[in-house]
Amino acid sequence: MGNAVNWSGAKPQADLHTHSSASDGELTPVALVRKAHAVGLATLALTDHDTVAGLDEARVAAEEVGIEFIPGIEIEIDFQPGEFHLLGYGIDPHAPALLAAIEKLARARHERNVAILERIAHAGLPLDTARIEALSYEAYLGRPHLADLLVDAGCARTRQDAFDRYLGKGRPFYIKKTCLPLEEALSVITEAGGVAVVAHPYSLFVSKAMLKRLFSQWKEMGILGIEAYHPTAKYGQCAILERMARERGMFITAGSDFHGKARPECGLGRTAGNMPIDARFRDELVSALRDLRRNSAQ
Ligand code: AMP
Ligand code: ZN
Ligand code: FE
Ligand code: FE
Picture 1 (cartoon, protein in one colour):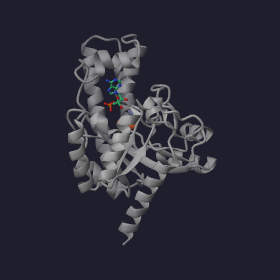
Picture 2 (cartoon, rainbow, N blue to C red):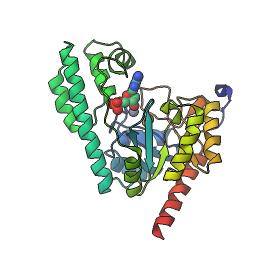
Picture 3 (cartoon, protein in one colour):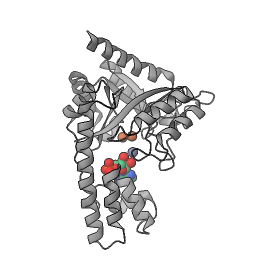
Picture 4 (spheres, rainbow, N blue to C red):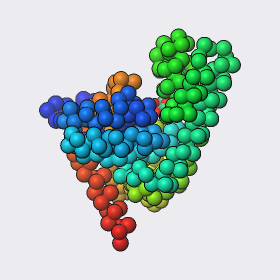
C-alpha cells in the first residue's frame, strides 16, 4: 500500500539505525560516516549489534566531515516467538556497566559459535573451523559471518541460502543465542546515559493487540521510544505503529538498518516504503535525550 507514496524530490536528512564492520555491516565506521555525508545526511546514529567498538572512530570521522553523530547500540533481548531488538542512543561507550554487559554477550556469542562450528564439523562440511574459532575470539562474529563461510566453502549459494538450509531458526545448525533480559538491557542503556527505543516492533511476531499491551508496559518501565519506520515493514503498517506510540506519549524514530551490500534493499537514509528519513525523527530523539539529561541533572 504505502509503497505507492511518491517521495520524489525529498532528500534524506538522517539515519538512526545503521551497522558497520564492528558488527555485521559491510563498511568500516569511518567509511559509513563518509557515505552518510556523501548522501547528504546531517545526522547519523551507529547502532551495531552488541558492541560499541565502532563508536569512537565514527565520532571522530563525523567531526571531520561535519555531521552530527549519535552513538548507539542494538541489543537482542530474550523473547518468544519473534526477535526483540532494543536500541540504545546517546550512550557513553566507556560506561562500565555497558562494557560489562557487552563482554558477557561476547563470551556467550563465542561459545555459541563454537557449538555451531562443532555441528558443522560433525556434519562433515568442509570448513576451516579452527581458523574461525580463533577469529571469533577477536571480533564480533555472528551467524551472517558463518553463513558467508558456508558460501565460501561451496556449501550454500548465498548468505540467505545458508540461513534457509542451515543456520535459520529450526534448521540443523541453529542454536539459540543467550540474550539479555529486557530489564537488564534497559538498565545498562540507562546507566550509560542513553535512551532506549524498541527496534522494528513487528519482528516480535505478535498480534497488534499484544503489541499495544507491550507498548504500554514498555512506556511504564521507561522505554520512551519506538522505531516505527523500518524497511522490513510496509509504510502503512509503520504509520499504525506511529499512531500506537503517539497514543501512549512515546516518541518515534526511523532507520534504514543499513548493512551495506549484504542487504541492498536498505539504502542509507531511507526507510519503509523508500521514505527518506526526515530531520523530525532526529529532533524527537535528540529532545528525548535532552529531557533525560535535564532530569538526571536535577
Ligand atoms: P546472530 O546474532 O549471530 O544470531 O545473527 C543475527 C543476524 O542474522 C540478524 O541480524 C540477521 O541479519 C541475520 N539473520 C537471522 N535470521 C536470518 C534468516 N532467517 N535469514 C537471513 N538472515 C538472518
Ligand atoms: Zn545486523
Ligand atoms: Fe535489528
Ligand atoms: Fe539492526
